[in-house]
Image (tube, rainbow, N blue to C red; front, side, top):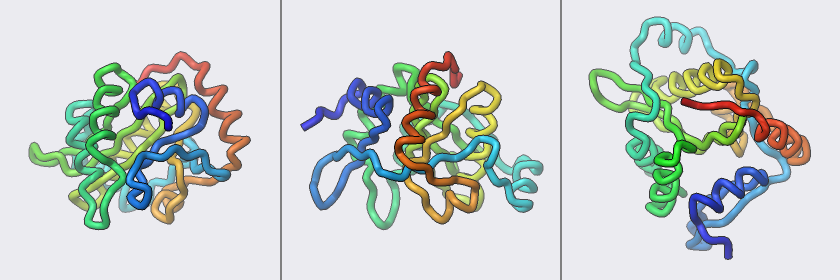
Length: 193
């Protein structure tokens, strides 16, 4: 069994593997699916209504000011979650080490949405996102894409393709293609902050 530590998470991501708690197994398992979902940085789709929300400045976007709170927001789902206390502990430690980051949306001093993930080289492995107000997570994702482009990242991994992510421009690629993109991205000297 692979120990769940900051070091093994970084190693796993660099090999194209990611962890997830599986309720049926009652443990954290490691995944490398045959088809991998990515968000092409030039292919992120901003709908007219989302563009309008961004232009109006309805949300304040912050970086890394409430990392653990974003994780807990992502974990707070009626259907249950794979984000356990172990995940929060390990990813918070990765955040302390400067590897995990959050993009947050705030309104009237309250955290209302966000996303988080791990940056390695020119790759960002997005883990999850949440919202407490309409469009709050989409604005956070748009801000993440903008930041990655601005800092010359080349890969935004979103793991699995969902209808929601597909509407925003995510695509699936074979694992072999993903691994080639990942290896190139890991060599880049990008900095998220």
